[in-house]
Length: 356
Image (tube, rainbow, N blue to C red; front, side, top):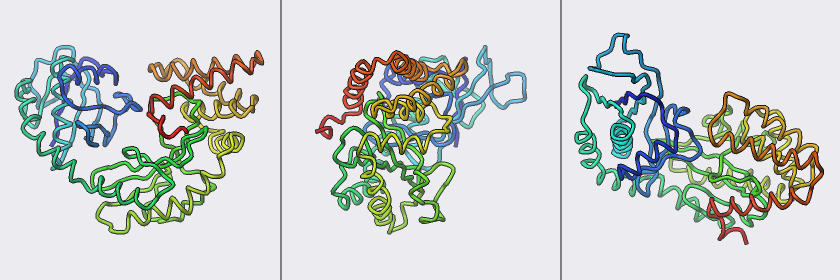
């Protein structure tokens, strides 16, 4: 099934979240992803549970042949939610559509030519919401997380993330993301002096030689692994991957200088502003100022005039700030700024209990 919303413009993540909050619909959007970038399965949080729905953004031409009934006004964009038999996906689709209808003047269509009223949309959401919560509580994903956590005493589990201890100057660990009948395992390495509200995954370093490990489910393009929940050995394979591959790597980057060298080796040619910023700031924290300057300047250049999202502007500003301080050789100011950003990251990511 699918639910299509016609809009005058695609809202930002903050605008969309505000619509959901005003409508008192218990859906939280991922902080790491702008709505304009939604494609395929989009993770969300439904009440206190992990959920999501396939989401696609497209243009709308009212003059082209269509089965939908107007009038369409000046609506030229669409957000389409596709869902199958899962109650959580159904709720995410209709909850999001209800908020867009009420607060973004959206026209909502679901399998029929006539647009739905807000009362019809919210009825569909409320009708299936209890079933969705029960489905989420009994999910194989929650069972998998508990099984893996019991077998990795050197890690602390916080929701879907597993942190390697001690935390030190860098958050190191792995995350397990649900994707319907499958789940993905990614790793994260995040210098705490890089301010963030969310720990972003990163590709597995090539030095770990993971391409041949469980080859049939390895995806080299994303640096992630996929498993199905119905494979009984999945938990054991994750534990083997972590203990034999990830733990030795995490131990090798405990020193700030080693961390900076590792990130430089992996992301020196990256075109991702997130990786460039964190690598540049890790180099600055380690006193590798020329390397930091090279990465930060590239991040500023990459931001450019076409990427004007708020989070991109914030990254650009931070990179400019540290780059200017390096050029002015105000190294004490660099250390002070990085310490402030570290405190911010620990607070926003709720790592206070681990940062001891």
